[in-house]
Length: 63
Ligand SMILES: [Zn+2]
Image (cartoon, rainbow, N blue to C red; front, side):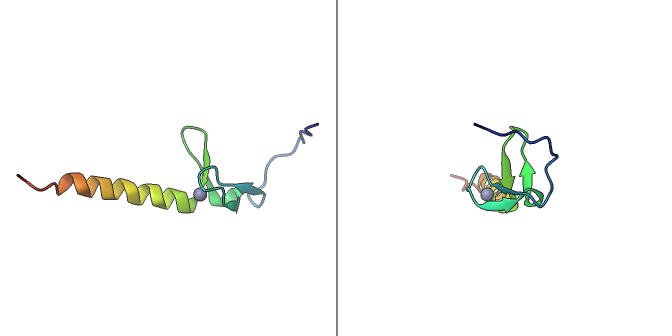
């Protein structure tokens, strides 16, 4: 049986990152546009991946 408490979540509540499964507090997560809640580490990784991809595109060797 699932209990649904009528309480607003606090930023100090423990949750899990939905990408890396790390245990983090709600205040340390970011809600993505697709509804996922991920930790800042994953956000940083995603940003870095995006930058690397952008740089790779920009500096493609000219044949
Ligand atoms: Zn994460």
